[in-house]
Length: 175
Image (cartoon, rainbow, N blue to C red; front, side, top):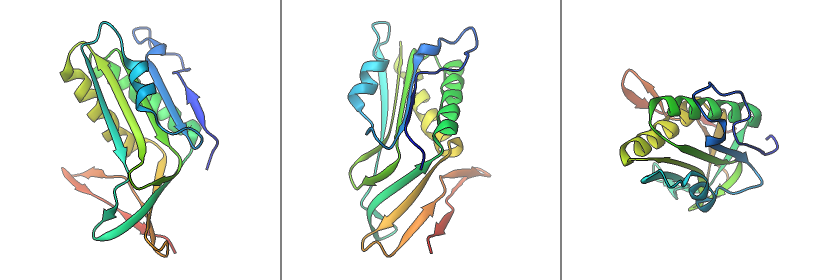
């Protein structure tokens, strides 16, 4: 696991994208905060703020889950999230985007990821948040270990991928 990193889009943006319009955190030291994300994306010109919170559920395929554990390569994760934010800004009329993802253990009921976007109207904010979570799962180097009750059994899970229009999930059993 890599140390935490927090960035407000440090790379050089295209001229038409304001580099201060992104808030990205991938951290083992700071839990995702809906309040922090809301405050960052909130703006008087925006009539919509959409959010997504990903939480650890208590079961998967009939097995009791005790926690998820995330690992990631922080510098690359932040770079990929920055790219996704920039792509989202070109696709949707959004003012600001916030993304926070936890690394390390995430017990049942706890938040592992928050995405927030603000826009003048709801459609762009909703579409942006959907785009961001789908692309985050497909492209960002953050890996998930699902740990079951008793901790004897755990599985590294590959994020949901689209293949030929069908969702498939690949799982690797920890030995």
